[in-house]
Image (cartoon, rainbow, N blue to C red):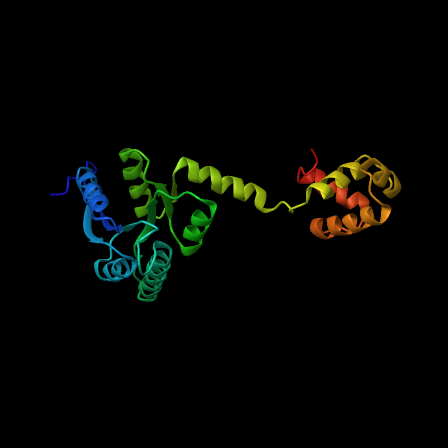
Length: 231
């Protein structure tokens, strides 16, 4: 029996997807102790999760990424989110408020590639299995409302990527030349300072201009200062 939510609201309905039966059993026991959370189904693979999500219409799908043979968690997330979007659009056309399940990734993997793929697939949140039960419960409730829920290590990675997303990827040599440029040195002086030829300096400057979207030395220095590319 699902514990009653102290607020008296309907419980958050969960579909659990993990290919390890022992892990699912542990999560079922854990979630069964949480007030206001009800597990309405469980799946051991991606295909099964997609089918159950369409049939049960849970509020949140708790999704692992690595699901053994067959459809992985990323593709399952993509299909569930696409189906939820279609359902929401039909509801809107009919004058009804509707949304399909939100997907909350629950995994042991926290690489940049996994995080990026999950978010691009439409996952509302990304939680690591190492988190405390209270964090999991809180993330589930947030996901049920369509709010983003991220483990602190994942949030740190996402923020770091966002902060660096707008910065051009300059090579170490290009940064060296840009630094000399900011000091007001000429091409010949930069070449002498870095023990390279003037032709090499000109080649690097052309690449720097392209990456920064400028066509003058002053413009390159201004953009570099604005984006904090100078050490």
